[in-house]
Length: 146
Image (tube, rainbow, N blue to C red; front, side):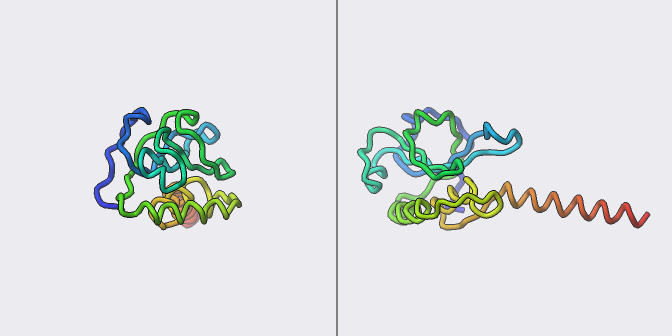
């Protein structure tokens, strides 16, 4: 998506390099789902108007919010945004904060985090849910034909 994907890792926030990352963790509300966010660490925080000392997580819960990363639990890096895309990320984050409505199928935490980091509003979890639902429907229809 942005080049080489970051290997899944659980790294303390203060050990992440400066940058912007698509991150995820296990959802505490839906056992089989992941919760997605955007980690902003170090110098890129300045573009958001924040001193570069404490990492920040931007995530939708369903309200969109920015919180000190230390207060949000343990996240795994999924991908890293190229440094030349920082201003685009800032612009998309601003747009996301102006779109407060949560919709599980079209504007959930993963849609928001992927939109902010890549410009593409997509949820792999919703895609898998749809594919699984279609596969189950095909199976049910095929059972009725026997």
